[in-house]
Image (cartoon, rainbow, N blue to C red; front, side, top):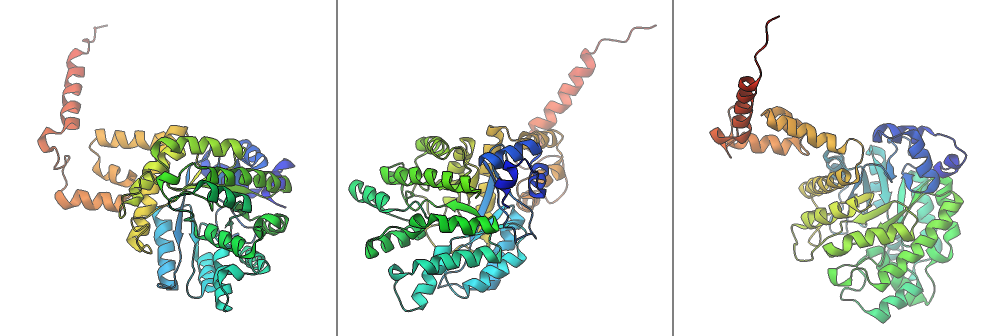
Length: 439
């Protein structure tokens, strides 16, 4: 029985209770959200070693970190270390995007050691296995793809990205319109190439009921992928992107009716003035389904700093309704991320998510900032560091210029506004207070 089917019956599951506690919201809110499909709980029924993760309306904006090997770098040890770094930095979920080395073994080890939800893109494994059979990816057997999806679900994967909306119709829309960068989604490109080579429709679309049965069996959340997402600002919010989104909205309805949880994936590279529009279009077309966005990146010209371009877009997207932010690291567009890249990417996305949560009025979000303000006013440096997004970095910066404990920093020193104001406001308060009258 899936979370949606239980919610429709009015049954409160342990997973719903766990989400309500973690989010400081009522169980009624979670129950209603799951029943309507505006909240998903990403935990495979076989992956019971992790805490259930709630994503959606009225909940804290969540962060995903991508890890995984390539053919050039395929160390299990490195990916497990990235997993640990991502979780320690505050990632709510991790996706394994491995395409090199023993990818099944890597995934199993990640599932074994993870304390958070794990997602995958099954077409990657299907593509690798097709190539290992001595065939090009365009000759992939659709049955292989479904076998891989079932295998990963059986292993305990909590959510899967499936590019069901990449269809012959969206491809024709792309051809007619034209783009600078065509298709940048790796999974989307695999499907488009397959469609063109085989002159046939995407099997994930034609056999969608087969996919739903697998997801329903394990209560795996379907993350309907945006294979037509824009890869540069000039391609954003075009007809191909919206064509796919319309299809994803229709597929969301089918899955939800069957009792399968669904998220919708979104762009991508988007000009800052189009970010809010994209969020509103998605929420309308997909009936409030949780929106999972990559960034979005608000400029194309900052390689090495794309964790910043992504955080800018993520904050705006989150404030406008996005529920789940996929991190972008400083090495985006340049290389496979290392441990420092993973850490920086997670922290940047967490900053964006928290800023969005304040704008959305998420319970407890503003309390964190208020408490930081109180610690700053009190010149409580230890308290400020403990409350910070990255205490280790804050402590290191503080100690680098102020080796001895003092109540000021090297920016203002004796001219500290907090110190002066506290002193003189207190003095004014004591002198202006009326004298006590005798009895």
